[in-house]
Image (cartoon, rainbow, N blue to C red):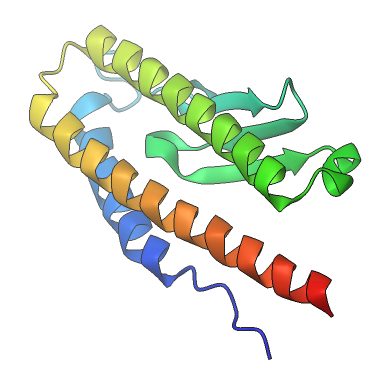
Length: 148
C-alpha cells in the first residue's frame, strides 16, 4: 500500500507565517479612518506566477502560502518530473511577485522591516522545503502506481 503524502511539515510553517502576518498587519497597516491611510486590499498581497510557458499557474497569499495551482491538462503526459519542475517554477515566480508587492506596501507604509523580512524569509524557506518534499512524495507514489 502506498504511503500518503504528509503535509504536516508545512503546517508549522504556515502557522508561523500566519502569526507573522498578524504581527505585520498590525504594524504595517492603518485601520480605516486613521490618518496613516487605508488597510491594503487583499489583492495587493497576492502573488501570481507561471511555469512551463504558462502551462502552470500559481497564486500565493501573503508571505507565500499557496492559494491556487492550475495545471494545464495537456501536461498529463509530460511526466511527473516535468510537471514538478513547472509547478516549482510557477510557485517561485508567484512568491517573488508577492515579495515585491509586500516590499512596495511596506515601503509605502515607511516601516523598517528588516527583522520581519528575515523571519518571513525563514518561514518561506521552511515552507518551500516542505513543498519540495511533498512533490518528491507525489513523484514516488506516481512511479509506484505506474509500475502496477
